[in-house]
Image 1 (cartoon, rainbow over the protein chains, first blue to last red):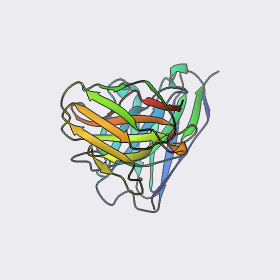
Image 2 (image 1 turned 135 degrees about the horizontal axis):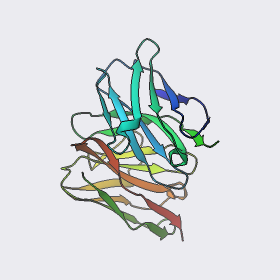
Image 3 (image 1 turned 90 degrees about the horizontal axis):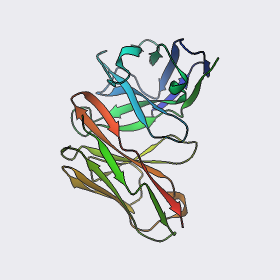
Image 4 (image 1 turned 45 degrees about the vertical axis):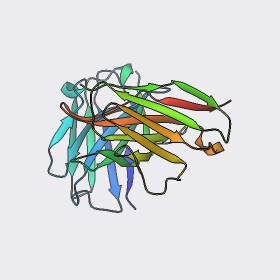
Length: 122
Length: 109
């Protein structure tokens, strides 16, 4: 059973960089054809896809966030990470890491982390 | 960019009733549509993928249908644990990624 767990600071100051890590257990991040993704959800609002990294290391980002986002992978630690620069209060949200499956067809998210709340405030 | 709309925004029903949720895409997404359930304080859970396939462990009362631009999630008889928010999601070839609909809240009447 694959499990994902987010970790990182729960409070980030405006203009700084938000950094989160997702640790994958129960399977190798390098095996299979999956995207490893980040999704966020402001309180009381819907889901926003941030971006993904493939097992090959290639990335895709939400165009609305692309200039501020970097997703990377560390296969030796079975982890992938999110960096979001120049944050504002609008970036306050619960951040989820997730696994996308069926990457060539009906892509869906079959595993999610529990989510971590990141608040942007001075 | 493909936009998903969901209707209604809120659906007020009683346990045992049938729930019909709609998701419409601004252009065809073939059958590449998924549905998720989210309860307060929890991560979303995959219910349906590829428009009509139930995910592992999902009860048979959940069913999905549709193709192209119009999709439906049906809960045949609502159980108390089904009151939640439901999201549809599609994959995009360009720009590459996924997008979610705004959600439908199913609450107790």
